[in-house]
Image 1 (tube, rainbow, N blue to C red):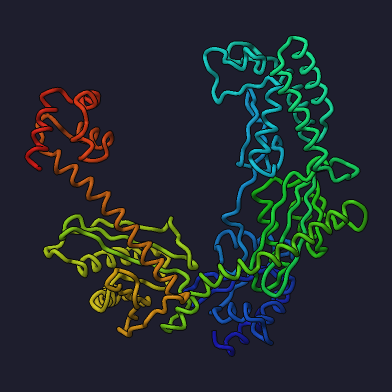
Image 2: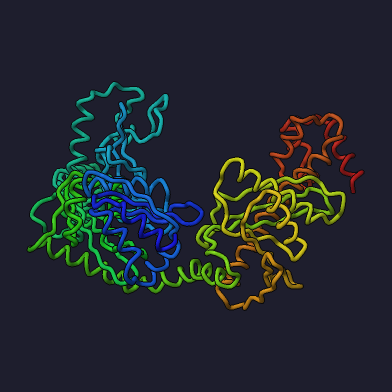
Length: 590
């Protein structure tokens, strides 16, 4: 957007709270923000100097829009909704995060205990998180030894082993009073919330009984369970005066990254911890706040949250509807300081790794952009073809988003057989037309760059197809050396660019070329094998579509069918006459 047009647009922006959306030249939302004063915030982007990151983002802004809200908290809620909707690349997004193990008491007529990673703020019978699945399973094992809830996924028709060893009430054959379940669930809940004395007393009683009955192995199991509970409790206690569930969130940032450290304290113990590090583009405090709220949309919130950044307090309290505090003294202040120190250590230790990953992806994309003179290609679609002398022709398309494979967007194409043994340009012409006609008709996301395998002929084909569809999308061709390795690229004008083997661009492009080749070849092999199956079995007397499908699914390859015994062929429905016809057919094809 020209600067004079920006200034004219800014004149009409009100001095009110709201959310704003930055768009690039392709009308894609690249950043969503919120502001107490929209006019001041938006003006700040286009006046004065900025650091490298913000300058980079501003350089890609073509225009902006905004939505007025009644308060800053409403603006934050709207911002989060728009971030989920548009997934802007300059916002910090909660994605690809690990899930934490929890112990769940299921809400069923006959409840059971289980370890789960499927969590919901609505589920009040979730306990955790645990540091890892083993810790959760060990706790579950102890509880299952003591409390006779059902262990099976579905009720059987007769009692199982757990009933006979006293670890299940067998609701499959017995009527269990609902009050009995209520009492058991109450005891388990108290244990998982930190009241371990009743469970220890029960285990000690069972251990004594087992010893008296000379069941020494069982007594040893109870003893180990008691020791495990005591060690775990003593090791994790942090000496808070109450057993309230609370999270401590430490925060640190520098000029490029933010780091968050989560300590999950449950019943006076640190049950788990986690750390996050992200690059940011505008305001580190606001972007960290946005991430935290996204986090608690996915994971159950505790009774209380402790934070090191006072600026988050009002928004977090309003949106999460729970107490948010910044401790000033005592054990809570100490724990908060520890979380902050860990966040600072995370920032120091992991920043170099993040920078390296950034250079391999965004750095390589920016270098490619400068090399061939196009906007940064955040979305790349690459194509490759495969066939055997014109038979079984296929194409594959892989998509790289922000320098990484987006496998959900990969596509396979069966093509028309070519009249020539090498119909590469005909195949390319067909797949490009089919792909980008669909993009136009269904208004799909367009790539910033198209990569085809080959040289000038493939480039000319690409140019013709895109021109016929009136699409202005940059494209390049990747040529291979004699040993079939990525060698050099040609831009859409036919200009050749040598690729230095140690450059970031070479590493990115060669990985794309290898990936699309692997994807296409795999598809071709599967299709070819199926075709050879069909052709080899098509004319065998006695083998119709049903038996042919059964042979393919059972033996997977022609060689395995040839080597199969008569007994194994009879098992899937072939009689002796059909088996002999199959053997004869294979002899004729040798």
